[in-house]
Image 1 (cartoon, one colour):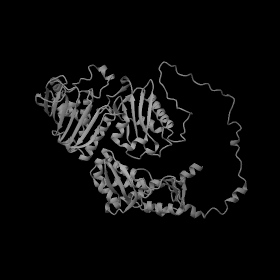
Image 2 (cartoon, rainbow, N blue to C red):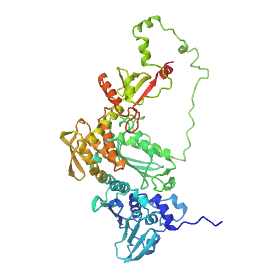
Image 3 (cartoon, rainbow, N blue to C red):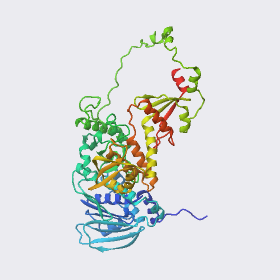
Image 4 (cartoon, one colour):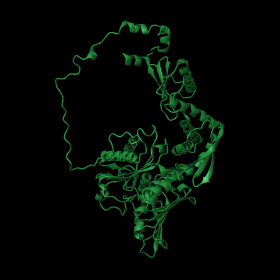
Length: 607
């Protein structure tokens, strides 16, 4: 039998590698800009055409390359960043694998013009599908100029599954923002189809954040800074009033590299547990400076997941630092800290011996349950029974409400529920409506119920285009980031159909002159932000999904909040409206609206 295992050609191997490294146009931008930073560039220009489908050009004023290095740079595992395996544990550069350029050249047509500063002439190298088309001397500025055209031209399936131009452009902007926020000492520009989207001058970190996300953030940023033997932490967190349900700007960076870290996100949010409503997030921009030997960045192709050796210690340091920042600036008068003054920042010191176990003094002869008065059960006086005489209804009435039924399922339709419920309702702590049904006690989350009711109402209005508008006396001004502006044109017709009226004031600012009728008193600026963010997260062209996102954002903002007291008539109307909905059990985003405490469960609890 002949041999069947063969080595893949480099062109095929590079295409396979490109599937992990180059997933969309934003991946190309990320890799090329990071290479420019590693080359010591002080100014980087990014030019995009058709959201990267047609071309992506990155120009820098870095060190440049010789003609030999230019050609070798597109070979797999060719890099100037490391020499031995030990170098992986002392990385100070963005790239190190030597895969990016080879992966890009495998799925696109690439032209590179580059010149070193001390050279009189540069070199121009052309590649297509990993194959060198030609190389010749050329005149060009010092640095490098990468031009990537026809991305995925030889992988039709990958090109076909790219999202819309607005979605892909938004992904490019996101990747661009994650880089520029780390390097305020470098100037950047970003152009899309000839239109300038960013022009970021060399500046301080705070100003760079404001240049990217708008000046409205300035009053909400609180500085965070702490130095320990484990790590150094710096950056900014938002004030509690800057919290948002969606779209909060949350960024972690370690040693100049963006990362995702849900565990550290929880550390930040613990400082705001009683300061922001449940489900809302505050913005933050946190920068970690950690010894390269204490982290591992080589666990994911995109390098956004990073392992820390002292993860728990850093969690405690971060949480305490954020609490200290909020406390020092007296952002909230009554912050409930465990200790007075500055919270203790834990400092890791391997030379310190662990503390001895505390001694506990106790009396071995003491038995708290011996001859306890709790065990001396007293009979209830007969007079108490007289207090309840006349309060019990007829036995058949009681069994009609609480008829025990084995393994009864939750009713699936509003028609079944409305036939069972009691006309009397009780509100618990302004959050839950309780009413008796045949199978037991039904508990309804009033906020979620109202979200479901309003969601179906707004969704129908969107479909029918019947939204009525209400002019506002004092128009509010909303400031949008570049990524939000790219989606506004897509969302604007839906906003108008709902009843919004926006006027472009220039520089990313819009005046909200009218809002949908019935939304008076709602924070319309946050509402519009939430709707744009919802559409951004959907990443779809489907009008139906867009309508659902907009309707859900409206419903969340207009629904009665938890804690609002309702009278019996209001509770009755809400329950009846809920039962008329197409789905009474779940909110549009899948959260439970109600539950039924069965008669058997009640008897078991009281047994």
